[in-house]
Amino acid sequence: MNKKICLWSCPRNVSTALMYSFRERPDMEVFDEPLYAHYLNSTNLNHPGKKEILSSLEIDWKKVVYNVILKNRKKNSFFKLMTHFLVDVDKSFLKDVQNIIFIRDPKEIIYSYSKVIKNPNISDIGVKMQYDLYLYLKSININAIILDSKKLLINPKKTLIKLCDLLNIPFYDTMLKWERGSKEEDGVWAKYWYTNVHNTTCFLPYKKRLDIQFNSSQKNLYNKCKSYYNLLTKLSI
Image (cartoon, rainbow, N blue to C red; front, side, top):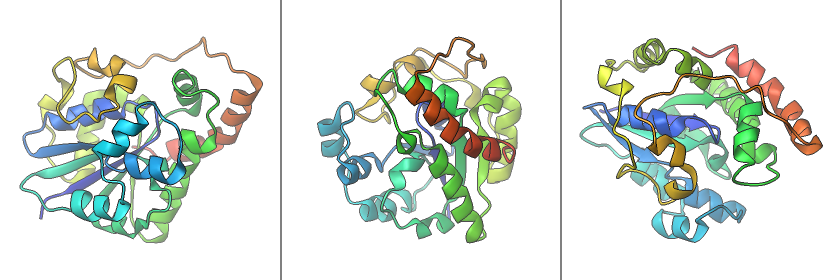
Protein backbone atom coordinates (compact mmCIF):
# COMPACT_ATOMS: atom_id res chain seq x y z
CA MET A 1 0.00 0.00 0.00
CA ASN A 2 1.35 3.42 -0.95
CA LYS A 3 2.11 6.11 1.58
CA LYS A 4 -0.25 8.92 2.49
CA ILE A 5 1.67 11.88 3.88
CA CYS A 6 -0.21 14.73 5.58
CA LEU A 7 1.60 18.02 6.11
CA TRP A 8 -0.12 19.91 8.93
CA SER A 9 1.10 23.45 8.46
CA CYS A 10 0.42 26.82 9.98
CA PRO A 11 -0.54 29.60 7.52
CA ARG A 12 2.07 31.79 5.84
CA ASN A 13 4.69 29.11 6.05
CA VAL A 14 6.67 27.72 3.08
CA SER A 15 4.18 24.86 2.83
CA THR A 16 3.44 25.53 -0.85
CA ALA A 17 7.15 25.41 -1.65
CA LEU A 18 7.38 22.12 0.23
CA MET A 19 4.41 20.82 -1.77
CA TYR A 20 6.22 21.83 -4.97
CA SER A 21 9.31 20.03 -3.70
CA PHE A 22 7.38 16.79 -3.20
CA ARG A 23 5.69 17.32 -6.56
CA GLU A 24 9.11 16.91 -8.21
CA ARG A 25 9.41 13.36 -6.94
CA PRO A 26 8.68 10.64 -9.52
CA ASP A 27 6.78 8.58 -6.93
CA MET A 28 4.42 11.25 -5.58
CA GLU A 29 1.08 12.96 -6.28
CA VAL A 30 0.37 16.18 -4.38
CA PHE A 31 -2.90 17.72 -3.24
CA ASP A 32 -3.44 21.32 -2.16
CA GLU A 33 -5.50 21.90 1.01
CA PRO A 34 -8.45 19.57 0.31
CA LEU A 35 -10.09 20.49 3.66
CA TYR A 36 -10.20 24.23 2.90
CA ALA A 37 -13.87 24.30 1.80
CA HIS A 38 -14.92 22.31 4.86
CA TYR A 39 -13.13 24.82 7.06
CA LEU A 40 -14.75 27.87 5.46
CA ASN A 41 -18.17 26.23 5.49
CA SER A 42 -17.84 25.26 9.16
CA THR A 43 -16.51 28.58 10.43
CA ASN A 44 -18.27 30.92 7.95
CA LEU A 45 -15.07 32.96 7.81
CA ASN A 46 -14.61 35.40 4.95
CA HIS A 47 -11.38 34.44 3.15
CA PRO A 48 -10.29 35.79 -0.25
CA GLY A 49 -11.98 33.78 -3.01
CA LYS A 50 -14.40 32.10 -0.60
CA LYS A 51 -17.12 31.44 -3.20
CA GLU A 52 -14.62 29.91 -5.61
CA ILE A 53 -13.17 27.72 -2.87
CA LEU A 54 -16.57 26.45 -1.75
CA SER A 55 -17.53 25.58 -5.32
CA SER A 56 -14.21 23.95 -6.25
CA LEU A 57 -13.77 21.56 -3.29
CA GLU A 58 -15.83 19.01 -1.39
CA ILE A 59 -17.38 20.56 1.73
CA ASP A 60 -18.09 17.33 3.64
CA TRP A 61 -14.95 16.48 5.64
CA LYS A 62 -15.85 12.78 5.72
CA LYS A 63 -15.83 12.62 1.94
CA VAL A 64 -12.51 14.49 1.84
CA VAL A 65 -10.94 12.11 4.35
CA TYR A 66 -12.22 8.85 2.92
CA ASN A 67 -12.44 9.68 -0.79
CA VAL A 68 -9.35 11.89 -1.13
CA ILE A 69 -6.84 11.53 1.70
CA LEU A 70 -7.25 7.81 2.41
CA LYS A 71 -7.80 6.82 -1.22
CA ASN A 72 -5.31 4.25 -2.49
CA ARG A 73 -3.40 5.40 -5.54
CA LYS A 74 -0.67 4.05 -7.80
CA LYS A 75 1.76 6.61 -6.38
CA ASN A 76 2.43 7.92 -2.89
CA SER A 77 0.29 10.92 -1.88
CA PHE A 78 1.33 14.20 -0.26
CA PHE A 79 -1.42 16.41 1.17
CA LYS A 80 -0.66 20.01 2.06
CA LEU A 81 -3.08 20.87 4.87
CA MET A 82 -3.59 23.55 7.48
CA THR A 83 -3.86 22.35 11.08
CA HIS A 84 -6.67 24.79 11.87
CA PHE A 85 -8.78 23.19 9.10
CA LEU A 86 -9.36 20.21 11.46
CA VAL A 87 -12.26 22.03 13.12
CA ASP A 88 -15.09 19.54 13.86
CA VAL A 89 -13.15 16.72 12.15
CA ASP A 90 -12.81 13.25 13.68
CA LYS A 91 -9.02 12.94 13.82
CA SER A 92 -8.92 9.17 14.22
CA PHE A 93 -7.99 8.81 10.52
CA LEU A 94 -4.56 10.23 11.36
CA LYS A 95 -3.48 6.80 12.54
CA ASP A 96 -3.66 5.69 8.88
CA VAL A 97 -1.37 8.41 7.47
CA GLN A 98 2.10 9.78 8.13
CA ASN A 99 1.90 13.14 9.86
CA ILE A 100 4.28 16.09 9.57
CA ILE A 101 3.62 19.11 11.80
CA PHE A 102 5.15 22.03 9.91
CA ILE A 103 5.86 24.99 12.18
CA ARG A 104 7.11 28.55 11.86
CA ASP A 105 8.00 31.31 14.32
CA PRO A 106 4.60 32.94 15.11
CA LYS A 107 6.17 36.39 14.91
CA GLU A 108 6.81 35.78 11.20
CA ILE A 109 3.37 34.20 10.68
CA ILE A 110 1.52 37.13 12.24
CA TYR A 111 3.54 39.66 10.26
CA SER A 112 2.84 37.92 6.95
CA TYR A 113 -0.77 36.88 7.62
CA SER A 114 -1.82 40.39 8.66
CA LYS A 115 -0.97 41.63 5.17
CA VAL A 116 -3.84 39.57 3.74
CA ILE A 117 -6.29 39.21 6.63
CA LYS A 118 -6.35 41.98 9.22
CA ASN A 119 -6.43 41.33 12.96
CA PRO A 120 -5.85 37.57 12.99
CA ASN A 121 -6.58 35.62 16.17
CA ILE A 122 -4.96 32.56 17.74
CA SER A 123 -7.19 30.20 15.74
CA ASP A 124 -6.13 31.85 12.47
CA ILE A 125 -2.43 31.46 13.29
CA GLY A 126 -2.75 27.77 14.06
CA VAL A 127 0.29 27.36 16.33
CA LYS A 128 -1.71 26.33 19.40
CA MET A 129 -3.66 23.88 17.25
CA GLN A 130 -0.39 22.40 16.05
CA TYR A 131 0.66 21.85 19.66
CA ASP A 132 -2.76 20.34 20.44
CA LEU A 133 -2.38 18.07 17.41
CA TYR A 134 1.04 16.95 18.63
CA LEU A 135 -0.47 16.08 22.05
CA TYR A 136 -3.37 14.22 20.42
CA LEU A 137 -1.08 12.14 18.22
CA LYS A 138 1.17 11.39 21.19
CA SER A 139 -1.88 10.24 23.18
CA ILE A 140 -2.68 7.61 20.52
CA ASN A 141 0.97 6.55 20.23
CA ILE A 142 1.58 8.23 16.88
CA ASN A 143 5.00 9.83 16.46
CA ALA A 144 4.47 12.91 14.34
CA ILE A 145 7.45 14.41 12.54
CA ILE A 146 7.91 18.03 13.59
CA LEU A 147 9.56 20.20 10.97
CA ASP A 148 10.55 23.84 11.48
CA SER A 149 10.60 25.85 8.26
CA LYS A 150 13.59 27.84 9.55
CA LYS A 151 15.72 24.68 9.62
CA LEU A 152 14.43 23.64 6.20
CA LEU A 153 15.41 26.98 4.67
CA ILE A 154 18.82 27.07 6.35
CA ASN A 155 19.77 23.71 4.85
CA PRO A 156 17.13 22.30 2.44
CA LYS A 157 19.06 19.25 1.27
CA LYS A 158 20.16 18.08 4.71
CA THR A 159 16.67 18.59 6.15
CA LEU A 160 14.88 16.89 3.26
CA ILE A 161 17.23 13.91 3.46
CA LYS A 162 16.40 13.59 7.16
CA LEU A 163 12.67 14.06 6.48
CA CYS A 164 12.62 11.42 3.73
CA ASP A 165 14.50 9.02 5.98
CA LEU A 166 11.89 9.44 8.71
CA LEU A 167 9.13 8.91 6.12
CA ASN A 168 10.96 5.81 4.90
CA ILE A 169 11.11 7.06 1.31
CA PRO A 170 14.19 7.78 -0.81
CA PHE A 171 15.48 11.32 -1.18
CA TYR A 172 15.62 12.73 -4.72
CA ASP A 173 17.78 15.69 -5.72
CA THR A 174 14.86 16.79 -7.90
CA MET A 175 13.14 17.94 -4.68
CA LEU A 176 15.49 20.92 -4.52
CA LYS A 177 14.24 22.62 -7.72
CA TRP A 178 10.97 23.32 -9.53
CA GLU A 179 9.80 25.44 -12.45
CA ARG A 180 8.78 29.03 -11.88
CA GLY A 181 5.05 29.81 -12.07
CA SER A 182 1.74 28.24 -11.10
CA LYS A 183 1.17 24.48 -10.92
CA GLU A 184 -1.84 22.46 -12.03
CA GLU A 185 -2.32 21.23 -8.46
CA ASP A 186 -2.67 24.78 -7.06
CA GLY A 187 -5.98 25.56 -5.40
CA VAL A 188 -8.19 28.32 -6.82
CA TRP A 189 -6.97 30.55 -3.96
CA ALA A 190 -3.43 30.61 -5.39
CA LYS A 191 -3.94 34.05 -6.96
CA TYR A 192 -4.49 35.51 -3.49
CA TRP A 193 -1.70 33.74 -1.60
CA TYR A 194 0.95 32.25 -3.92
CA THR A 195 2.45 35.24 -5.73
CA ASN A 196 5.80 34.97 -3.95
CA VAL A 197 6.22 31.21 -4.31
CA HIS A 198 5.31 31.39 -8.02
CA ASN A 199 8.39 33.57 -8.48
CA THR A 200 10.70 30.95 -6.99
CA THR A 201 12.45 27.89 -8.39
CA CYS A 202 13.86 26.58 -5.09
CA PHE A 203 13.78 27.11 -1.34
CA LEU A 204 14.99 30.64 -0.70
CA PRO A 205 17.66 31.14 1.99
CA TYR A 206 16.34 31.92 5.45
CA LYS A 207 16.54 35.58 6.43
CA LYS A 208 15.63 36.67 9.91
CA ARG A 209 13.32 39.68 9.78
CA LEU A 210 14.55 42.52 11.94
CA ASP A 211 11.93 45.05 10.83
CA ILE A 212 8.79 43.48 12.33
CA GLN A 213 6.76 46.04 14.25
CA PHE A 214 3.55 44.98 16.01
CA ASN A 215 0.59 46.91 17.38
CA SER A 216 -0.69 45.97 20.84
CA SER A 217 -3.15 43.38 19.50
CA GLN A 218 -0.46 41.66 17.46
CA LYS A 219 1.93 41.69 20.42
CA ASN A 220 -0.69 40.02 22.60
CA LEU A 221 -1.29 37.38 19.95
CA TYR A 222 2.43 36.70 19.64
CA ASN A 223 2.79 36.34 23.40
CA LYS A 224 -0.03 33.77 23.40
CA CYS A 225 1.55 31.75 20.57
CA LYS A 226 5.28 31.79 21.27
CA SER A 227 5.27 29.26 24.13
CA TYR A 228 3.60 26.64 21.90
CA TYR A 229 6.13 27.28 19.16
CA ASN A 230 9.05 27.09 21.59
CA LEU A 231 7.86 23.70 22.85
CA LEU A 232 7.44 22.34 19.32
CA THR A 233 10.68 23.63 17.82
CA LYS A 234 12.65 21.85 20.57
CA LEU A 235 11.19 18.62 19.17
CA SER A 236 11.78 19.43 15.48
CA ILE A 237 14.11 17.43 13.27
